[in-house]
Length: 318
Image 1 (cartoon, rainbow, N blue to C red):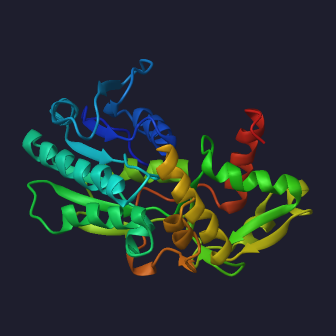
Image 2 (cartoon, rainbow, N blue to C red):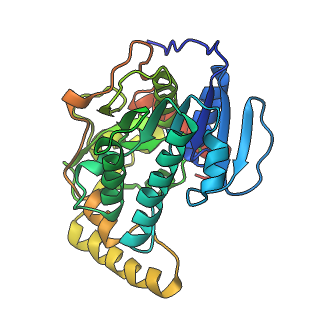
C-alpha cells in the first residue's frame, strides 16, 4: 500500500537537524516533495534547493539554533554522533547539544518536536551510543515542555547513499556475509525512504508524548541468513554466512579504541559497538510499533536491497 501523506497546504515551516547526512538527504527530498518549507542546520555552505533555507551553525551554537527554530511549527531532530572517541564525546553532542536545541525550540514557540532516536536506546548499558540516545530521550520524557513531542526509534537503516552497510555488502564479493554475534541474532530493518516518509507523516503532530519503534513491517525481523537469501540472484547463490563471535569482534573493537585515542580519530567499530552489534535481539517490539493512517512501508527487504545495491553499482561503489 503506497504512502498517502497529504500535501502540505498551510505553508508550515519545518526545522531540521542532520539534513546533510544519509537519512537527512532522503528526508529533505520527502519534505520538499510534500510542499513543506524547510530550515536545515549545516556546518558548511550547501547548494541552494527550492523550498529549503540553510542555517549555518551547530548544536553547540545557541544563536544558530535560534535562527533555525524561529517561525517554525515543528522540529525534526535527526542530528547526532554515531561514532566518537569516547563516551564523553557522545554525551557532549547527543545529549548536551540536544538539550540546547530543545530549550531553543521552546523559546522560539515550536509546537512539536520529533526526535529520531534508535533501538539502541533500549539497552543503554551495551554501548556509549545507546546510552547517549537514552539520555536524549530522557531530556524529553522527564521534563514538562511547552511543546508536544514524539520519539521514534529506527532499527538498522539502509538505502541509496548509505556507506556503512556498504562495508558489509563488499564482503559478498568474496562469497561471505559476516554475522556479528552469530547466525541466529535477529534485527529489524528499514529503507531510508520509508523512514523519511514516516517522519513526514509525523509532521501532523500525531503520536504525541509517545515513544514508537519503526521497521519495514516484518514482525520478528530478520537474521543474517534472511539477508543472504534476499540478495539479488547472482550474489545469493554464492553467499556463505560466517559467524563472528563477540570475542573476535570485541578484540578488534578494543584495538580500535587504542588507535582512536592515539590518532585522535574515531572508529566505527569499537568495543562498545561490538557489544551492540552482538546483542541477540534488535527487533521492533510490537506494543511500540509505529502506526499511522497515512503511512506504510514501500520496501520489503528484497526490493530494498535491490534498490540499494543498484545505487552502489551505479556509483561504482560495489
